[in-house]
Image (cartoon, rainbow, N blue to C red; front, side):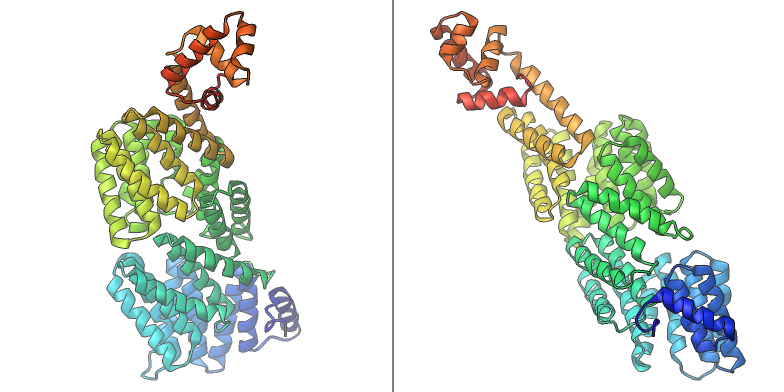
Length: 533
């Protein structure tokens, strides 16, 4: 009963107790193995699968024995234990090598598909996954059909057929949410679909399926696998949407969850996400430590460490780092984020030529995939390069497009970065009034988010602007401006400074002219925005 009701800890305890009284049969051993794996007892689960395999062999049941060998090999393959995986998968193949058709032959196509997928042989990968799904249909095995659909969807996305790929992933998820497949496979499909959403930056779909994964995990409180991946994806979405305190909390939970009882491969993604949140919040030592932890688990790094060097004022070190990362990361989705960072860093070291090359490549990726997130990145990158190439008017067109996309995606930090860039473009055009408006808007947003490093940069620009413009005023005019901002009338100011009201009026008129202001309200806002009060 406990197994059917997904009470995995109880199922494990009850079946273990029964096994101690008398050795379980192969079918019950298989259930005990699954319960062990679902509560995070990976080593025990593998031992129990091996026992079930031997028990099936003793009964002369080659096909279920092959199924056990397949799962032992497949999980070893996913954990990076290639030698062990090869041994078990070879045994599984040998057990079903007769001419007799069986569903296990379909399962054995899956590792071949994943090997081909990760080696870049997408044609072979698609063929293997499609054939596996066909075997599943013949034997009415919903698990195999769903795994085959999921694999085909990932391949199609990788080859640029995003719409077709996403449709297959959604179909696979329907089978999961309907409870048609086993929990171990359901969790694997969930994680794969969320990974695909991240690869194509389909944020809306990622959010929808993340919520479904949360509900699925919540319905099985003692479930250990997959919960960590759910926390990582949730942290990513919260960071994008500006809930940074919550994102930090979820990233920490993900690191903790994926570290027990033994570290999982997804731990690298959790630490990387923790590093991202800490970097944006200005907690640089904590960010550096998180990125270091991530590097021990992630094969392909993200641009975070290079951006951290840039935020720390180490532009040349950042450039060396992003150069290396750009060479390593070739998949279009992750590469787009690397190129975005590359443009920012290259411009910081006055390398406009390579920044232009990276921005053009990013624009090509965005044009091929036509995804709002990528188009937002590309427009912002091209705009930044245009400013460096002394075409601020053209840059503003790109920035406005990028800002609109970020607003649609409800990404306040990214939108505010664009406003900061727009301020620089306006300043290059000599439009100080609009530059100030954009700087103030960016300042307000960064302050609300807690974006410490970005806030410092805006503050420096505002101080520079204030110094430049306030330098136009005489010492007496600065005094008058401060008193206007404090709410005093011309008569009150005259009395305080012991000058005539007519002289005060002349000073106010000069202030309005020099600072291009139209009212006392505007003068007050200017004084507050530039720390004159």
